[in-house]
Amino acid sequence: MTLREIKEILDAEVLAGEEFLDQEPVSACGSDLLSDVLAFTKERSVLLTGLTNAQVIRTAEMSDLVGIIFVRGKKPDSATIELANIKKIPLLATKLPMYEACGRLYMKGLKGCSELNSTACSTPDETDKQ
Image (cartoon, rainbow, N blue to C red; front, side):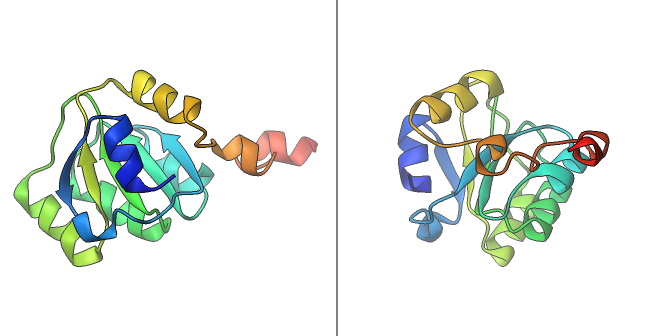
């Protein structure tokens, strides 16, 4: 599934990176905790979040994410959009709440990180027990 298809599934608006919507994320992550994004996401994932600050763009860059989808009708300011353009990170915005947006993508076949690797979403304590 491409970001362009995700745009249609979520009835989302493109805020940045229209030219990069043919990328295919390997999984999705829904979180408003950037520390969890850094700890548990897989490279080439797409992030669904309600956070709209520049740190989201920096986190996506560090985690090698293919795009960010803002939920609940939230949109970042122009400086954050410009940073995404510079970093070539597509931004989408949907009015859907995070739960419903993630559910729609999951129902259409986009996997979560736990389905890619059994330890990908484990906390450090859980990983030690395996």
